[in-house]
Amino acid sequence: MFEDVKSFFAKDNNMVEPPKKKFIITICNQKGGCGKTTTSINLSAALAKRGFKVLLIDLDAQSHASLGIGVETDKLTCSIYDVMTKNLELTQAIFSTYAENLDIAPATSMLSGAQLEIVDLLGREGILRTAIYKMLNANKRHYDYIIVDCSPSLNLITINGMVAADYLLVPIQTHYFSLEGMKELFATVDIVKERLNYQLQILGILPTLYDSRTRMNRDILAQIKEYFNKKVFKSAIRMNIKLAEAQISKISIFDYAPDSNGARDHAFLADEVISLTMPELLPNVFDKDETEKIAQEPVDDNRDGKAKETLHST
Image 1 (tube, one colour):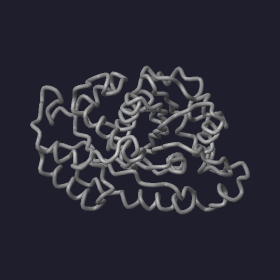
Image 2 (tube, rainbow, N blue to C red):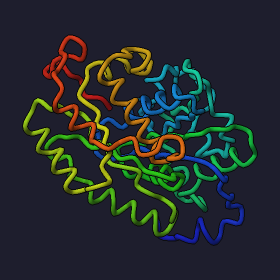
Image 3 (tube, rainbow, N blue to C red):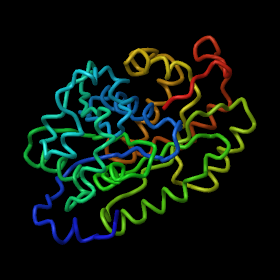
């Protein structure tokens, strides 16, 4: 995949200059079931509700982000697949969602074959970045945040998500074996940063599927904080059946259950993301870990579902 590093940086005379102001956040972890898509949808929705213009890019052939925000993928005439394989302008693959300020570049199952179609192309690792930069530099669309939802695998399409990004957000379950695979992920990140995107930064590690009622979850969260130190978000996404129900209903948690813990957690995450990327707008408002507050709160089973009923999100 990285055999010819110069394929993108030295030999591609059409490399596009980065736009002056952009916040592209790629959400990835090759371990499935850690809440990537749930985070992508609801972080995007939270930022949109804060008044920011947001584009959600679905880079997963399973299309869960697209389906979860109400896109009928079987009726699409074009998608992110066409951007990746046919040089389609990104603007032509962007659709409005039901939510104000939130657009999506959806995926279909066709994306599963995209890697084979682009593997021999010059600059294959930077296709998505070029498409985004061309769109922003031409002022065809303006977005304050672009959120990229990746598949649970470290393939060439996911690498495109990393190369396009300013920041990576890594969801990690507070479950046993959650740290497995992180070494491989960060080794890949280091390669991407060294050879393809030197500006790439880790925005944060996000604890997900957290249940403060179990000692195992509390212990693993402590391990995550010890291992990653200040890179761990102060936010945490609790296990919450409403999050899964919202995806089934094809709307964000804020429109499905605005008073739920799932809505609160993602709203807090959005504020933390704003604080980290635009500190002039929301400076230093996170003195205490939200996870510490969560641990002290009683569980409202009627609102959020009992632990045994909780569905795992994608």
